[in-house]
Image (cartoon, rainbow, N blue to C red; front, side, top):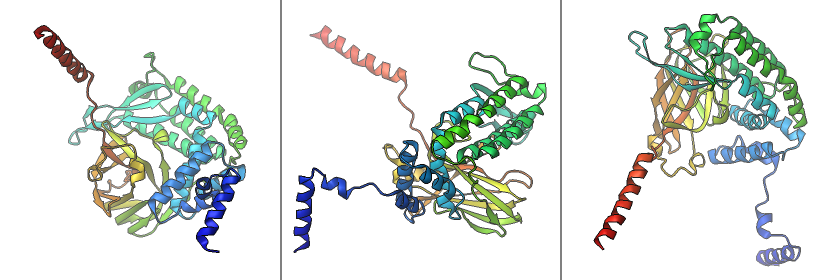
Length: 402
């Protein structure tokens, strides 16, 4: 029998059974297939697989065994698979009420980077951050409020990293370290941070410690939520990348780092964030394209000279944004409470590369990196009212002249 006749007979049989041929042809991919596609050579395939698995993980469509396989993949030697698995599982964690309550109670997020005159260190615009429902401020690196904010932010990121991979014991240790950081603040330290609630009440050290304790106490509920969702509560953290020499540092198919000089060997920890759990908001007037990549030097790693970063992106991240022009995209680096626009050179259609100078020895040369684009300014209310008024005036004039 001719193959086409076989297909026609099959279609007829499916129709008699009430089964759509299109539904059969478009049957959803299996979990195993999607997990394998996280490491595919094609960016759009990786991105689509991540989105599909994220929908299943947050929609209670994965079994406990599948959720735990995602957790295990977080420590994969394939850093692309590891980071994307961590992001999928992180979305699952983000859907848990206990996680959201902990983040609301004690989370730290940079709202606006600090700006200052590099010649004298004088602050020209305070940095702003969120803690609980309160907002605080910090000045340039010349002032202690900068150090205190950075200490709080780093301590919370240790907590959040452990939570987002589902390691409750590590999160408990990180909460204890977070508490110690704030316990070492003086009254003047908390006063300078100027943490104020929406009711304009000023938080002191005891208030801050109470909120951290409240969040830590929710770890019992967090363990229950993890296990109730089929996850383990002792997942391993992503594996750091050893760096022994200068040159290309492969961090997965979507991200590549090149170091021109290496002062001391060590390790580099890569962690991904979505906008929903990012340590910082996008700079005012910009939006993030895709994920944020957090890079942290470990084990004594020190770099010098130039650092080049290559980030792959794709049209699938730009869907629904008709004003996007790839040649206007740039890479931003957020570190030390500051935002550094690195520019970007577009190549191979969907790769953006930027280069910057390493920070002086003993300071952070990495941080969080993301592609950003400018957000078009929306018409102001006054312009809309003016246009409406002009239209009304024309109507009145036409009536008067009729």
